[in-house]
Image 1 (cartoon, rainbow, N blue to C red):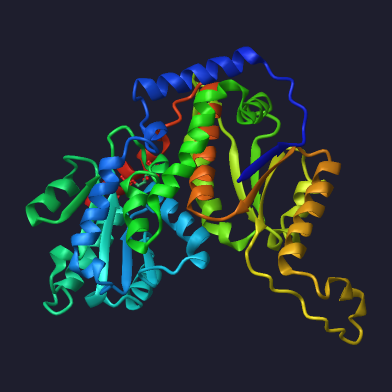
Image 2 (image 1 turned 180 degrees about the vertical axis):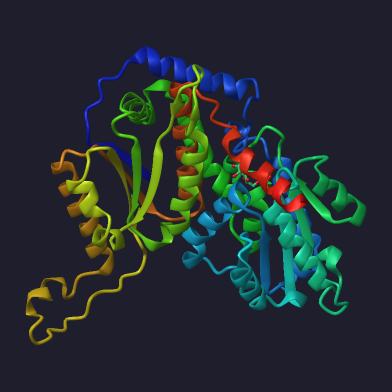
Length: 420
Ligand code: PA5
């Protein structure tokens, strides 16, 4: 389903890897973070989600035209990533999905204009239940829905996803809105396989059981192969060279990975940039590129710029669309005829191979993740793979992978400035 290959040598220190693996097992067993077991402990959640959709007249009878997700960061990036990966190979139940996340008024108001509020289902997602972007946008939508026509039957067209007893949970209970809970020990950026992603994806018609089954394949590898997984070698290399090769590029060869790259950037950046146990600043900088587009921009910097980067190539083997470049020879452009009759899929994947070869030749550490085809199963696997890799690196770096103290200060200053 998914093959992985490293194109660099790793002289691993088994002790470091063993310690990291043991820490991860402890995190899992002691419930320090709950994402490890999401693939296997959510039967009730899946039943609750399916029952709700089945019993909701608007969702079960396909009376909804727009699905509106209000949430930011870990509360929206994962859902957007999965939907963007899978939407072309599925007939969605609901045609339009809207992610309202930024307070940029021009973008927000124009996005809302595209929503038919009368036929919209609204999902408000916030673990803390107080994130200022999410709550401000929700307030604006509630204000619009005060129009009795638009707000018709709102309690059947809204769901909340949050922590138990958060302020948003209390509001929802008072209003008798449906609430799905995020497990307390599952943090935002690790939460896409919890109701945060499962509910909206199920509403759209994706097979969420398959998504979890895919994640469980690599969870089993983690539990059975343990520290012999290739993932630990890669994590060790990143850890060992964290100072001189501190930029980790994910070069994904399909535009469908645009949102996935953003999800990776959040996961990596917010988890791995912080102070370690000794108070030293550590951090790895994630960059997401799309092939072949970024061959025409960033590639030069990788090949001839400073040797401070690693590159992971993400390649989709089968796009399941046999479209070809027509046999059309254009005057003056005969030198491009070598692509005539070739599938677009073959060309983009050969571009990936060629670029990878050139980057390896430039002595840049490269690894490859090759996905046979995109479906819920392979997507679940991929999500969990990057989560595990992040945890492994966090353990080696000696940091708390799951907190984000560095983002609190700006929130406090915002409150101070706007309360004046
Ligand atoms: O990963 C994280 O914890 C953050 O990126 C959060 O997901 C983001 O800040 C949104 O927070 P909340 O879900 O509490 O609204």
